Image (cartoon, rainbow, N blue to C red; front, side):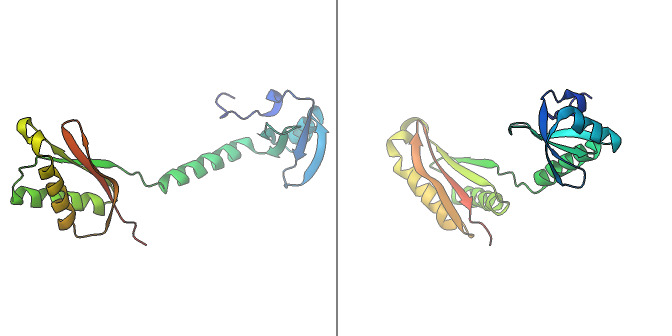
Length: 173
C-alpha cells in the first residue's frame, strides 16, 4: 500500500503493544500488536495507527479505504469553505486628473467589495519627490471618495520613490 498519508497500517505497525479501539469504537485496552492484527483480520478489516505519538500508540480496527476516503472528503470540504484574500494594487501619480482618479477609485471600490485588500501606490518621478505632500493629498482624496466602509491596514508611508497605503473592506456581519 503506497502513499498511506503517513499512517501505518496492519503489518507496518512495528511496536510490541498498542492501545486498541475496536470497530464499534469500544476501548479494548492495551493489547499485543499481533493479537490486535488477528482481531482485525477476523473481522476482515484493517488495523490503523491513529495516534502514533501516544505511548503506547493508539490503533483502531476499521476499513482503511473508507477511512482514507472520509479524511480526504473532510479536507476537500474544509478547502471549499476557505476565502482566499488577494492583495490588489492600484498605481497612480501625484498629478492625476479628476476623471482618472474617479476611475481608479471605482476600481478600488470593486476590489474592496469583492473582499480583497488594496494597496494604493503613488509613484513619484524626478522633482515630484520634493513634493510628497501632493501624494498624501491624493491618498486622502481616494479615501474621501470611497463609498463603502473600509479599514486602513497600513497608513500612507514613503518607500523609496513610492508612497503607499493598504486598505481592506470592513467585514459584512
